[in-house]
Length: 347
Image 1: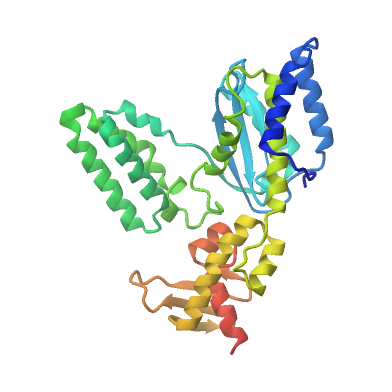
Image 2: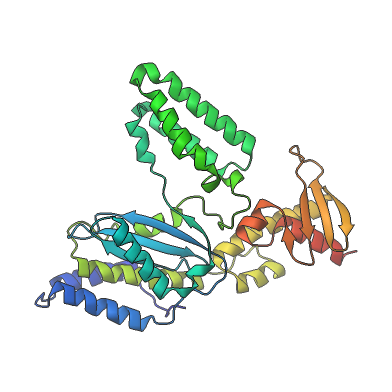
């Protein structure tokens, strides 16, 4: 997909310094155009072709001297491949141009199953939340994002709203925050809360952490004084470097023969997630702590004997389908499929 390279952070920093010292006789727009044409021609054919993908969308600031905002679109798959655009303002027209360019250069965008965009945590400062409570509010939101149980989401939400009501006398605006939260967060909880997204193929993306990580790699090198054409090269270099690092990551010494096979055909991230399920399936196999009820050939209804929640899962080993959230949202082998497949092979 990408050409291999051994680019280091130091190489990128040296590259920036070299470009800064070059003669700037060429018009900036021509330099930008020339670089982009060369990059596109060099990386032609690097389209994303995996079937199930998540699109991460975010904007970052202060990366160039013209004050352009960097609008990024990253496809989450084996390589976290993406494109970015610079826009002077986040108008609808500008963003539509960015999206059109993305769709034109990555035809497989049609395979995207979910789109992840930011929720603005800075909004809490505008709704009467005292600074002493800001961290508590963020902790509560994180709990709601990742909690797998709906009843616990409701409990955390209600406690958060109760805490903000108690703060009304100190800040005088807690009710406004409650109305804001219920309207702009709770009303769309099926878009950002794990337990309400069990039927959405999001590949584990509840936040924009992966694209934020990409921004974090660029910020030490780029700032508001970096000329636009100078800012482009390290960004392109990082995209090549990251893909190369994934290809060169060594296998986990704890992987057995089965996991080594998975490692050869899947990305590092997907293999690590599968390994967690694999270890759980092995542990259950040793304890024989699941109860399965055959319904038809290769189709089972199973539940954990010690499961306080009383959850049941529908498993079809012939079609490799399971009703659990992990299988549905990640499209990777889950512990239930592994367990039942192992039971069948030893029957």
